[in-house]
Image (cartoon, rainbow, N blue to C red; front, side, top):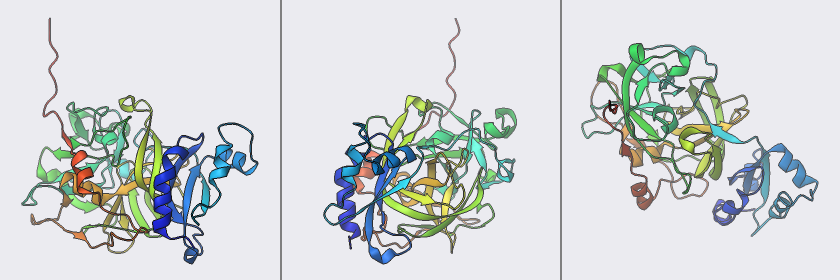
Length: 367
């Protein structure tokens, strides 16, 4: 039986090369047999159906024959292929339901965005020492103007749901982590500050108060969330420490970019469709914030998410508390086991320092 430590170390060695193979979208660590957890760990390979079929048939194509030789156990660690279409960001113009409407004060789970598209209010957080500040947590590609620090108005509902700057502006972009084509990414994150504190309510649609966040979670944990498009959904953590390639299309001229050590959360029905970007997964019991959804498989059954603890580390934030200004602390978590996600190292946190957005629109020169 393979240990999760051994599987993690093997994934670290081979993921970069495997992600260059045609049709491979992600390489991570999960259970060898989800129905029988005691059988231990495995390397999980997310690949499109054509690639996995080619691997099974030992296809002679030069770009797919490399996959079968990777499927043989290494250092006692088996491989499990999960058939999946490609991964892509999840802000856009997809059809939504009840969570696309205008709501005041604004709470987590509802539509938010720029004049061009819509995503989801992930959570109401605070980053100041007193806890009086209120900010919207969501994704870079939900709140930012094309991955730049240009002034960007925040609308609720977002532009894809009829929101306009004249009637629906609730604030503006505050800070964000810039996404990169050249280096590995870890979080797709941004905050927006409201025009008035009273415009934001520290609550979560359907589920109510979020009393804090967890520092760690593990493979097999069951979660829930509300997204602008899919609404109320549940999912199970299928793999962690997963390196993935995500298609950002023409957003910021990024194209396909790499994220490291992400979590893949599977639903029995779609859990991550266009407009669900930014939505935050909660623990099934206790409503503790757990992970931030930013991408998904094209069929929506897989959510690509990063631990919300990473956001809190990078932005120096905590879950905002209703009423008083005191910040809500994180819950305890086991950060040592390789079956669990772990906080970011201090050096990496420093390298992900958020960029402050321009406070006002640039004036055009007249001639």
